[in-house]
Image (tube, rainbow, N blue to C red; front, side, top):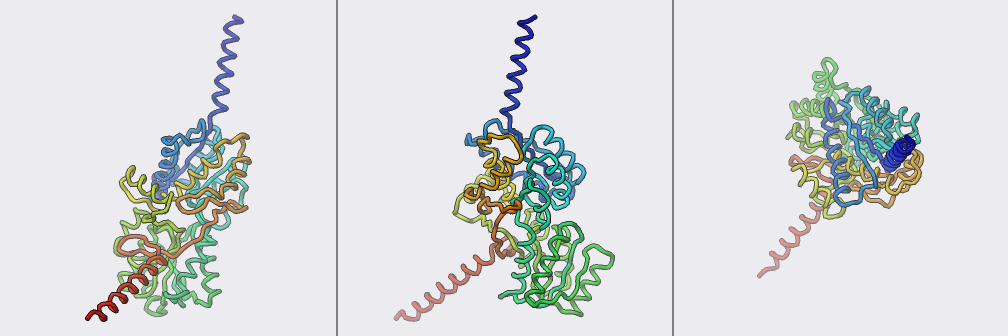
Length: 389
């Protein structure tokens, strides 16, 4: 009996040792439901990063990744988060939308475990907890950049009509945009809530009567497409700006020609870049998924890189230690830029003006540079032809 008891104790000790070595990362994303257009590419980016690390033998020792679907339901997202923390996760990649992140943060704070959002952007989120981080720029940055890109040359919008979806995302973003646009000296001619009764007729009346030289569409992808249909139907000729939420393969394909020439702010991510790690990421993503990655896939990939960077060689198994290590990743370069977080857990990224040209997202500032170079080259060739005897 003593021998059997001794064996049982030994097995128990070995099992506990195995538990101690296991390192759990959870992933809670809206893979189905209304927000699947964002959750699906984020997951593909997250999974690619973890799979690459496993293949390259750079995965933190003992790391186990557990994926859960929130179903685009806030209550379900919270429940899945709690379950993952119960399973030992020190860090969970989740809170893809502002609504989900806002509900999940109190749980992370209570458990003192990290919640790393790949795409929630409401300005107030980061100040809610020491354990919340995000690799997606805050709306404090996007709202200001959106106002700048409309007001400043070469677009020179002075009077803007706002078409807005009413949700937590827009309630955080719109005040920033409006404040920045007014501070430039611009005028908000009116605001229309997308989806309310008679909004299409009211929009058409305001375009005809108030004649704004720009329209800012603030919302997620479905609302943006609905607004673009109205604007294109009346052949609106002014400048159209919108949010970075348009930039998923799903919504770009659905929008088609409706989105041509639409401007929006975005963290720099050029799929044609020859720089690393972007070049390899784009190549591998296409090999695996037979698709070009969008910005949400890129942020998902960077979220996984940040998670692995914080967990690799972790000695103290605590959320506080993981949070501290996340703030020390500034030298790690992701596909959207350095993984540098400020004191509130916000990623420190610079946004650039992008637009949709021939169905593709393009860095507008780089486009202008190429156009200047093309015109200069054509001018020089014309001069040379003029000198030819």
